[in-house]
Image 1 (cartoon, rainbow, N blue to C red):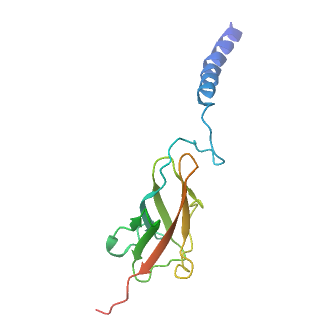
Image 2: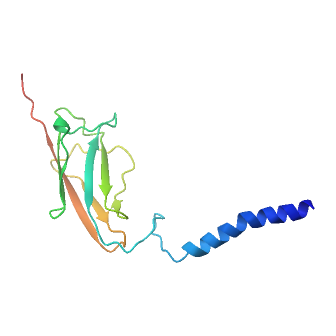
Image 3: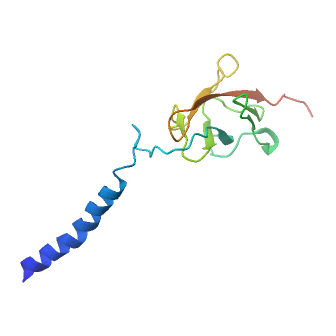
Length: 143
């Protein structure tokens, strides 16, 4: 009797797993395990630069200006922002991915000589656009 219960229990667990693996085997995934889709769109829809407290470091809480034709992102940061330790936060079009991956805080301190560049890759992995981030710092003013 116990053997029948065990076999019945295993069937209940394994059958759905086998069926779902059959259903999704036709969909390809990339080297990161992300689903490759038919979407060819490839752009950044939002960008924020966060400090070590994970709050935006934008001057006057202004938004970054994203030009999807020029593939540029322009952001003005507060005076004295430590650009050696910031976290770039991207919002991409559906199914797109970013290279290099943002894995943590990043050093943007040499932004004048070497503006940071990130490549957006479309959902179908056929279209790539490299965005350059241009950072300007708020000017110091005596009040």
